[in-house]
Image (tube, rainbow, N blue to C red; front, side, top):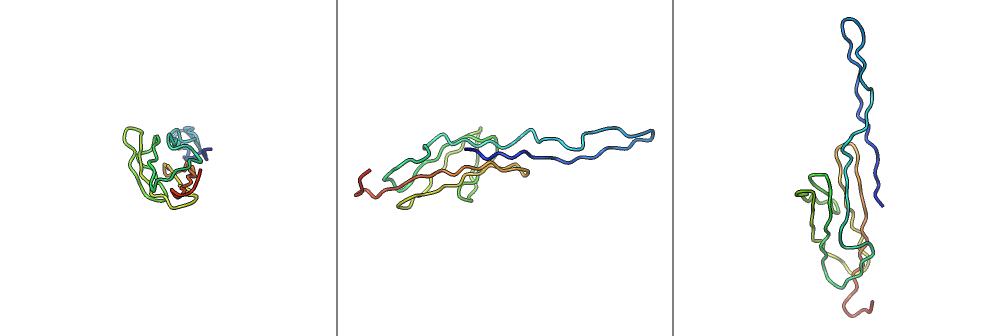
Length: 115
C-alpha cells in the first residue's frame, strides 16, 4: 500500500494601491510523487543472491534502501543484493514536500532449503 501525504504550499495575498488582490493562501501541490513496484511481487521467495526491482515513478529519482537511482522516462530498474532470510527493501520517491514510500519484502532461502 502506498503512503501518500498531501503537500501544502503556502502563499500570501498581494496588496495593490487600491485594495487587496486576492490570491489563494494555500494550494495542494499537483505533482505528488508516484511510486509503483512492477516486479518482483511482494513476498517473493527466491534462492538467488540478488534480485532486480522494476517500477515506475513520476519523480526523476527514487531511493532504494537509501541509495539514489535515476528514473528514466518514468521507469527504474535496480539490482539489490539479498541476504539469507527476510529482506525488507525500502523504496521512496519525494518531491521536496512529500514522500511516497513502499517496503518490499523478499525472502531468500538457501539452495539446500525446501520452499
